[in-house]
Length: 390
Image (tube, rainbow, N blue to C red; front, side, top):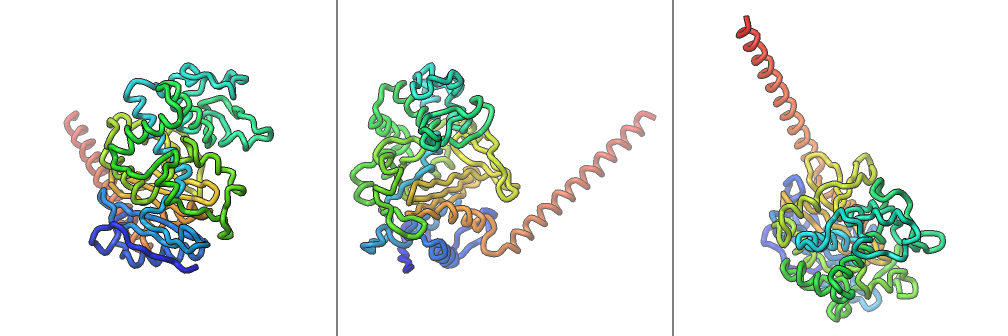
């Protein structure tokens, strides 16, 4: 596949910092991305890297439309898929701050839900459970044998990833505010997008996103037309867990807003970032879920992440709000999440693993020395105490 590479807004520096602070030359990073695109058969991609709270590298690669050879540019819009979830969770916390929604009051007290009213257990479901995937709902009701919304376990007792829970919560907010879906979109723009400088990220497509949207492609690089796309109807509605449309540079503004603690109070950020659910163990790494973010239990890190997959569009981001470091990528391919996972590892270690091993060894040695000094100090204190009691 021929790759089109277009430079967008970046700083003048020639390198990007890995998570542990090792310099990665931009040329090296670009070659890595091109190689990954070729090996994964990804038609197009937009990606942004953040160091010290600023975008230091933004690239658009490949094609938004393979048939017409239209390249991805800085205006190309992608479906963000499940990257919608942390953004929607962020919006929810605004209603919590305003006293309109309580994270721990059952949602049915705001809005009874006829779709699941046959099961009284739904009356225990709260906003906190919805945002942390503890409702017991399936991801989508279409995943059940008869397309029926069900509860798979006692709400609040376990984790199961569910878009249905997010959508029920969105309906509750509409009820509280007296909104239709367009009203909720307008409120998102007013409360979150505008204050954070996000210009072209929408849950309901507008004229701009429709004009600039990339075309989706499957695993074989074939176009995913509306007839093949089970998510096609959701593209044009407000689907809290899945319908956000965005671009890497635009989405990075929201990420930088997280770093700068914009819009929300500190207590709300603490709630958002606090682990609520244990997800699973992947390749030996345990993963938690907060209110909208995956949080891997990696030593020496404080990363919050999410991936997204709508048919023909996949995406991924990782952010450390305290370190003010992160990246986000969007693709019009089924393999963007795979690339996101590979890129996370690459950006943690950099191209040279030896440096990481040296760093970890130095940390281990430092910890051992501190423990030795602490033990020696404790022994001296014990001797002093014994001497004073004689």
